[in-house]
Image (cartoon, rainbow, N blue to C red; front, side):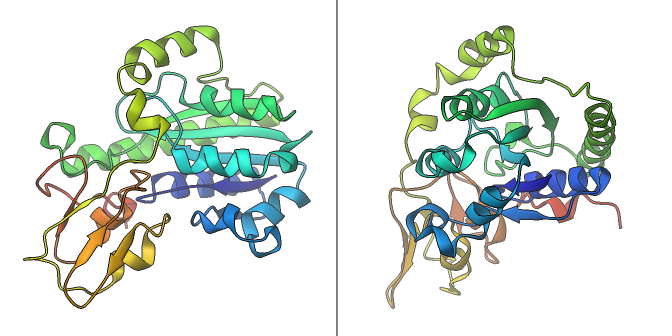
Length: 264
């Protein structure tokens, strides 16, 4: 089994890496950007890894009880690569999961993949421009430790042929639909409008341009600006050295990177 993941602030990356560590897998490979499905297949490490592997743990964050638009596009564009693959879905969320893993499972089943399990993991919320979602540092550290324990138990159960099925039942599907997905349909079915960049704070360092998975931010001598293809990963927000970017909210309360919550 190999790990394939899309991660914004590092939560999903961390969880997939822990999963393969406990499962003694070989590696975890990121879906780094939209180039992984717009460039020739031969240039995509993640696609080639899927092609060469029979078992995959596929990780992604849950947004509004749904999978990120970039991940749906990745699966749709590479649908033939998932045929007959055995896939365990690992989903991370900050507040509410619903059937986040189930969304991926249903899409993959359309392309003849076999879903062998699902896992929902509560992690520190990445939306750092909404104050109501913020938690104290020590509580976030505990959340990460609890997630690690849940991953370890899930791997043990998978080895014993009794994997968890988080998000995969009809009851989860109903909870996800009416809990968030139905009310926030437009936020999960299409790319979001441009991030807000405060050019009074921005120093045009280019960090956001470099790390945006959608090539959604451009830089010119006059200013840095966002376009209309944001996948809500919060990479730019959490890595801006001058805290000049907001996305859903209007103020930077906390830049949420997994490294902030891991005990050294």
